[in-house]
Length: 366
Image 1: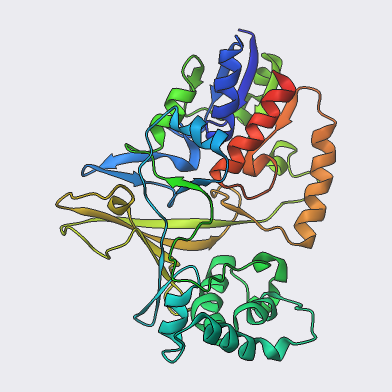
Image 2: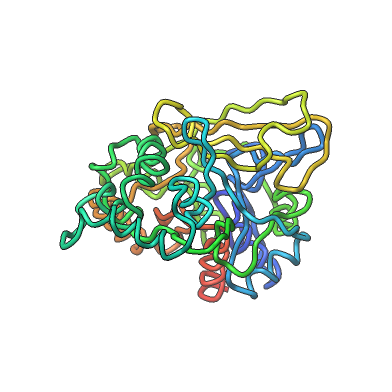
């Protein structure tokens, strides 16, 4: 059978393009290697709780157009992301704000005092250009905050010492001289009532969908069956790693159902000390203000990626950026195949960024 468009991957990027393509009268097939649609934003119901299987996803955007778009598929609640950091059984508010500063320095009461304390601790970097993440962090927030709330967490997350990580990773740290625990500055924020899976299912209405299907098991057949292929997998895999392997960080999740109503009192608690192997615990019911008798938690462990693992974060250091540029050149020479999404473009995207990039593609090809 011939299709106008075949989509490799059933995540948010491809679902957005597919939805617009169906509206434009295109015949679409979606191929997905997993047993479900929605990619990493997939949610399933456990004990009456919408469980974020692949880690916490909080929708936020400054774009009214994108906010209205996602709300056309599901009603969103008023959830505000206000994570808490646990360092040696002491709790701190994130992002860094007056609550955090007073907790670390009890004698700091006013914004002026906080600004002065940070400046004093950052003075060791005066006149110097930060050469790594550690120096960048100290120059922005001082030594105390860096050592308690950044160092251990970041080294677990990336699997490298902060002195070996580029300064650009935390070029901008949110520092607020107000009492505000809202992590995002965006105007719109929330969680879809009933989970994310329903959104992608509605987006893909009108498409033929093949689950548990590996595109690479019969790639020539699929490529010959469509006018265009929209590919959202890893770009280096498409080209058989001809230029070398791009690097990623992966994640491992340990989830359990607990016979208690409330485990930690917050949806996300980060564990910032190096001695605790996981970076955070997610308590899923709090995303939708759940009152169920039981609760579901997930411990999130960063992991070294190898072929066959799920790639979550591109490592955008100099080596990988140069390597991706070679693959981008190969991709641009393709007549039929278009590469998109965080893996096809080797870039971290928030969900609103993903939709924005998908809409750009729609304007180009539809």
